[in-house]
Length: 382
Image (cartoon, rainbow, N blue to C red; front, side, top):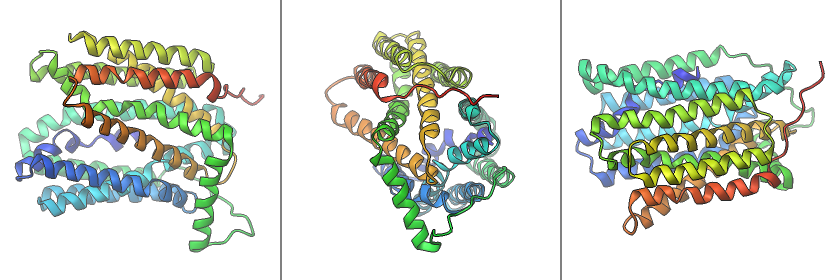
């Protein structure tokens, strides 16, 4: 399911679709902003919803909403349709974020296998990354054979397939407390409970921040293809350099799944090493510098999986998806701050320096890990 969720050929070409129908760079940027704001506003409320209703059905609805959005893009291409599609995509993304992690952890915990969560979520991230790579490859023949229409139809089909697979996921019914209200009152209670848990417990609050900041660093993704172009390679070779980033993500996630018990100090050292590789790789101005950038992705994604797994292990309340969504909201905030910083500094420094500057927050996060990241819990006996 994780691979199919990212196997959307439109991902590789939708900016071209917008431009082909007359949208300016400003209009396209406005669509991106609408998309981000939709997810930002709904992130935590949707997490609370996932703590109240069937999570697998919510994942299925997310797939359906995204399918409708992509269908609007290719069958009625216009600015209003593109905007509506981004809103639906944003809603679908909010429904998925936090819901998937909570469902996986609770099902494993119910089976007495909560210690397997890092391995499962790590493998999920690996398959998702491979799905992105496959979608890019699939877009080439789809565009050649049927243009945006065929590419869009394939994207709609994969989203519907994801929704159907979600309905087949195992999910034990959650038992509500006898004094817990239903309806809107119950939903608001769950929302308050999750937000309160995330902010009132100092240990958990710090872990929520760590689990948000580490993956938030990868907002630099949006600029890596531009950096690859600045190395002097032909445009057709830019995707080849980007494979270093994907390889780092895959290796980091898989390694974290196999070795989730790393100590906070060792993770701090690994994260610091990743910062050095990022700075050196981006400032080198050479295509081989992307090997260093791939090393930064490896370290960052290793830390992302480990911190996310320890966040799930630390939570004890019934609002697991809500707390996870709080972390995802903070991650999105961190990414938006990165975009704002690049926008403000873009006219004063070249891209390689700006990306190398990403080493600074990486090192700062590494400095927090020994104090803010709890050690791994030992697996249950037997």
